[in-house]
Image 1: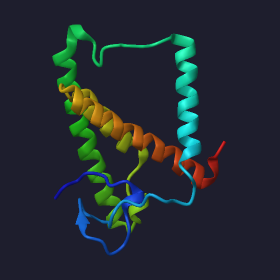
Image 2 (image 1 turned 135 degrees about the horizontal axis):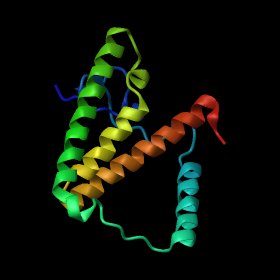
Image 3 (image 1 turned 90 degrees about the vertical axis):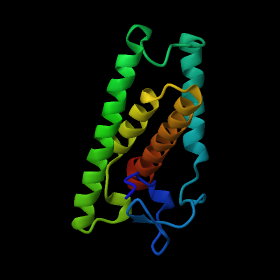
Length: 148
């Protein structure tokens, strides 16, 4: 079984099974618009550029690149196992698909997957996934009454 975590906005009852979850196709319209969150992120990036200028740091510390990559790969695998166990336990307790894991593990799994990659295209793809998880986390906070 694939134990990847499916974002809550992709989960709906009655769809085909994927990773132990049921879902149909990705839902693009949600109760709250995504643009305000993306606008906040763009504003923060502008603030960072104003403060620090253009930044071009290496993805990993060059002197320990392969050692660090292997460590990050182990961490990604550990978070995959932790998330799978969290989902298993929560599902056994009757949790709904949008509450059967937690954002900390989902985000850390994605970040460590990005850091574990060597291919720049794969690093970028994983970072896009991590960024999407961060947006989903902010949207979740906003939906649940913690909006700024």
